[in-house]
Image: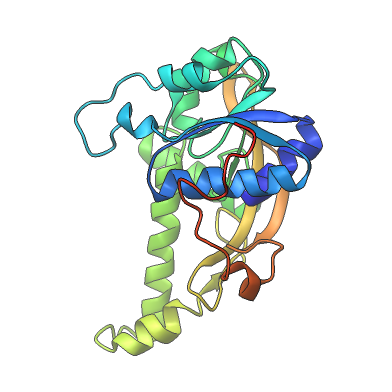
Length: 265
């Protein structure tokens, strides 16, 4: 989300945004990463709601309409809102009919697009994983094979699991199947894995065990009569630290409910 905060400020020219997120690490990291770089570019977060988890419990059988949260928290002075929720289909639709919107987190996925109408058009969001429309040979091959087998275009979850399993399989092959050697498998093989031909683009693992990969800015468009997440900008080789010095980054507080503070709320 750190690249996306800068992109929104520079390209959409938003000056003020409202944010809505889930009240645990996923929401804190998503909103915090966006807020940091958005404010570095002169933007302001002027309203925030990190209580969306009360309306959208992931581990509960209750899945109320998340539309209420962004509608409630977005002041009229904001240029748009940033949603750090999962699959906020109806939330995007509800607010999208009233104002310009930028969706973050996992909405709208390709699966969500199939359930939405024109209210999703023009929504911008970011993703490290592969949209079916990503134009590289590996992704075209993967998407075509997946659709032929499953009868539908691959989702975020499909590509994530596919790439993760490829990582595991290739790490096992690299040690000739000797998985009982935990140090060889986890300490050397898995951490040294990289791919220039994954569906999502090049991936390497940094020394902290986290991926360094492309971040794609996407926009919902209608192509061939269908809603599609089109890639409109690529940040190559983004690590967890992005453009910041790792040693200095690790000294800062964790992104939490209270950091960075919402100074303009």
